[in-house]
Each structure stands twice: as structure tokens, then as C-alpha cells.
Image (cartoon, rainbow, N blue to C red; front, top):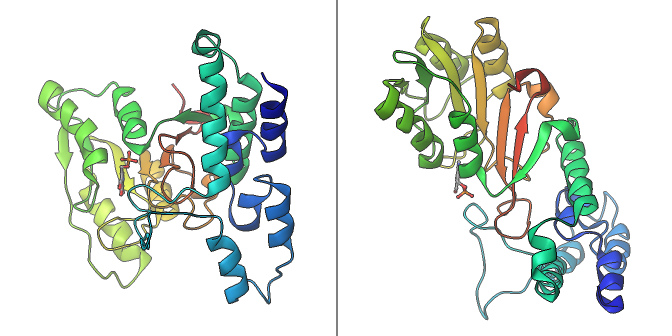
Length: 282
Ligand SMILES: Cc1ncc(COP(=O)(O)O)c(C=O)c1O
């Protein structure tokens, strides 16, 4: 690897690795000057114009574009764009080398950072491409039989519904589609929707953490507890959750969680996260 590129990558951390963190952590190893710029802000100045101007200066878009659509594909900060392009250059410097391996240390360090971000262990994390792939991995890994039921409420994203409809068509698995209240008054009101939909045939609850239709936050922790008491697995579509708020997967205790880091975690496009709780890996 050319010396200047090696130096550059060292200075910014390892490409995608730097994106898996929140707030000040997020920028920590993006580059030293940015990190020191942001560390100049404390709790009392975090909400000031100066802070946000510093953040804004890390993004660039088509002229006169104000970008609000992180829910589809997130904005990518300049240090991350530069790191992504630098990695692509290294690959193109010696294509077949990186076709068969390489970057093991970098990938491991990303897995460790992701694990820390979600308060789990690296052995429970795999790096994938997006939430759609993750939900497919979950559904495809299950040995469901005719008559088994999967619960998917009416707000689920197509990407999370489609993998189960494959089992519906090919194996006769039943999809149960309860209706969630639009403005629930309590956590229990949402938990009760899932509880009532459960039958002795229910094998999986597949649900969004943060619903993309109306922004509703689903109480995963309470639903997981209820489902686990009945021996049912809980698979979570975290596409819109990760990066919007801190998520402790150990605490919410779902079995599977999947994320598109290219939304709210500012990663390069096509970087996703897959979590499988150690005791639910099979
Ligand atoms: C709730 C939800 N789930 C899944 C997805 C699919 O994400 P991706 O296309 O990154 O796989 C989206 C995309 O917007 C979404 O909002």
C-alpha cells in the first residue's frame, strides 16, 4: 500500500469503523482536527449555532440542497466519504488480493465498535449490507412448518414482511397482521396487541423498533419479555432506530436485530449490521 494512503487511513481510523458511534464518539477517530474541534463543546454549548455549524461543515451536497432524507439513505460526512474512496483505491491497486481476503483487523475492529455501541459481544455481530438482507437472513434461517404463525403488525416495512411471505407461499406459514393503535396511550396498549395475536402456533414476532410510517417507538423490551415467557422468538427491524437513540440490545433482550447503518449512523452506503443473541444462535 502506498505510504501516503497508509498514513491517511491511519489518521482517520479504519473506514467504516469510524462511523459506528454516537454523538462525540461518532467523530472521535474521523480525524484529529475535527475531534478536537468538537471536544471544545461541552454540555452547555452542545445546542449552540457554533456546534451545529461545525457539524454542518462536515457535509456537502448538491448546491442549494437541504437534505432531510436520512430515513432512506443517510447523509455521509466528508471524512467518511474520503475514507470510503481511499479504501476503494486500495482495492483497485491490487483487486484480487482483496477479493480473497484482507482487512481482517479492520473488520474485526468494526465488529468490536458495533458490539460496544449496542452493548453486546462481537461474536453476536455480523456485518452485512442492510436491514433487508438482515430480515431475510433471519427468516431464511428458521425451519418453519406449515401452520406455524409469524406475527407482523400492520406498520411493518415491506423489507421485513417480504421474507416471511416467501415462507407463506412455499410452506404454508401463516402471517398474522394485527393493527397497532396510531396514538397508543401506554406501553401496555401496544404489548397487548401482540399478546392477543399470539396463539399456540406462534413461532416468531417480527417487528420494527421505530416505525417508519408515524415514528412510533415500539416497546421491544416489554414485548420480548412477554414473548419469551411463551417461548416465542423476537426479530427486530432496527432500520430507523440505530443512531436515533442509544440501543442496549442486552437490555431490550430481543433475539435478532438488524440495521441499515447507511441511514442514521452515517456509514458508507451498503453497510448493515446483524445481531443474533448468543443463546438464540442456531
Ligand atoms: C423500517 C424500515 N425497515 C427496513 C427498511 C429497509 O432498509 P434498507 O433498504 O436499507 O434495507 C427501511 C427503509 O427505509 C425502513 O424504513
